[in-house]
Length: 170
Image (cartoon, rainbow, N blue to C red; front, top):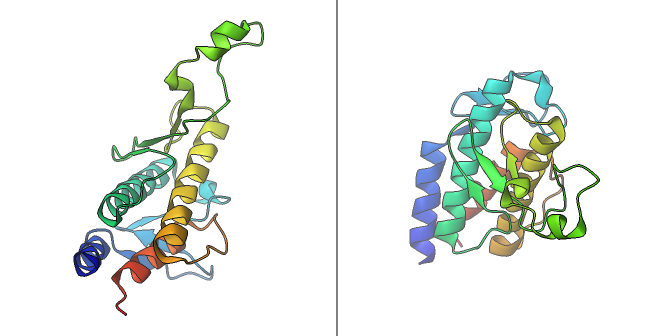
């Protein structure tokens, strides 16, 4: 099983190549030609480019989760540049403050879905979605390989490291 997982991870590194950006910034990478800075600098690229790159990251993360046999705490729904992620225990509500306790208890799952794109959504929901995706990558590294993530904000460097560790032999 380990050898097959390694082969799948090698295939994913070819399907979703993560290469360094030739710039003065350390840890600047592109995935399939789309730049994705760390989560604090997402405004440095266009929202369409960030959404596309996050869609690729979401797809690679979901596939790695499946092939490594590690369940993700935050379910990823890759849909290209309109991908999203679910936080099953989220307490954020889009209802107003006058809603009753019963209405809050029956909150729809719509309030637990966070976009990995910036179009027509509140900025904090997008940023929280990126945070959840980074937490999924962190979980795959720590649970699957016992490797600690030094900085969760670096999405592509952490994914690249995850793929590197997953393809490494004994």
